[in-house]
Length: 194
Image 1 (tube, rainbow, N blue to C red):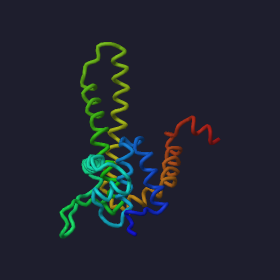
Image 2 (cartoon, rainbow, N blue to C red):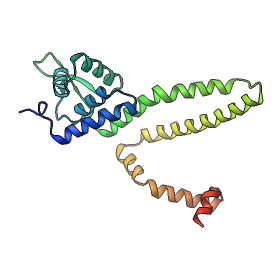
Image 3 (cartoon, helix red, strand yellow):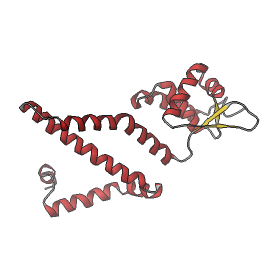
Image 4 (cartoon, one colour):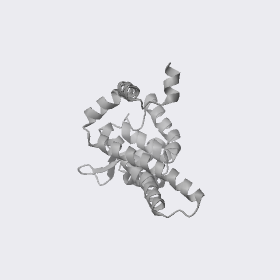
């Protein structure tokens, strides 16, 4: 009885959930389940093992593995004396998050920033275009600031980033206090608190 042939109930639940969530994250159910299986496995898996465990066709598994490799979410390896390719997820969850965030940025955010930059270089010809361009400028500034912050967080050691995330509400309270002292707080928010 091997791990791969008999998934424990908790593992099956995790794999099923990742399949359901896949479409919300921009991947299909099959790829989501494959990733969850590889992530939980205590050892690298080959395509035949993945297909057998999840009862997917070998061609679906091959396509899914290519997609996971394109996202840099699985690593290819070989075992001594075995010609098959094996796949494993990075061990460090912070590394997985970092890679996933970088890929989403490259695929989704950078094209939007590029489009916004081009639109901001245009000379508006009407009031409607001036209004639209100003709204686009606001969007560009927000996304650009978020990406600068993200770059700063990416440079942190994982332990430091985890500490920063753990400080979430404390940091928020300090910033709200600073805003109240400097008079920069939101009037609507200030009125709620009084």
